[in-house]
Length: 302
Image (cartoon, rainbow, N blue to C red):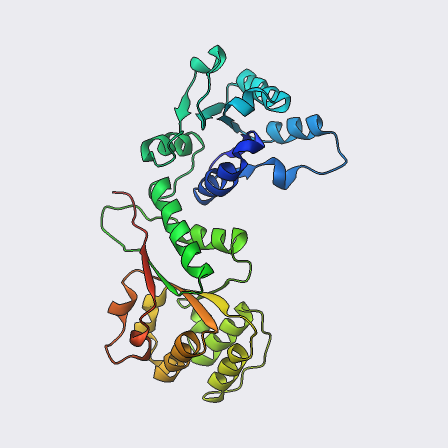
């Protein structure tokens, strides 16, 4: 678990803070405290700022001209400097004051600079298992495809000598911040060994608390539910590699999924696997005919 981190920033840089900095810190294991989530209306602002900052081990100061003209930001900065538990991040061109020039500050005006990101994450004791630019690029690709209702294969190869990238945290971030309707089903779970149980889990993950009859009628219930939905459902299937070890799922399940994805277009899948989706299936497998499946790879750090 990383440090408890207080984010001090001007809302002029809010988009970058909310969409890039905070997700990377959280996925890396830090506990992030930020005003938009923790401050409450009707309470003294300065008192809330101080209480949240005091509850944290560390502060991240996101520097910009707007930051230095903000009375509240300057208040937070001076308190961080007095505690000497902070890292300053230059996000926009600005003049660095003398009290910060003597300490570690990181130039992240170019947020594609992996080595600069590494400095920030390390100070917060956060580790993505990959570079921050890579993790964010993968996130953005998946978001773009899912918004277009295109299914995605998130490939997370296991390579000897490479660290394990935080793919679970990535999916949790997608669910929390982008797609509240994204259901998640772990095929590796022993509870989903039987096809009927898997069907029930998929329906529940998509918000349907339906009784699931025994096979083969389980697939009738599955198909009817998705066909009758007014909009496509989004569903993440993790550890998809396990399908090779679950012959009891039978080919009819995958034929039903192909129908819902390609013909009805009422289901969008985010498939997480170690190997490429197409490598996991025989050529005559129903899902192997899905031509619109996009592949995104998340590699660990060497």
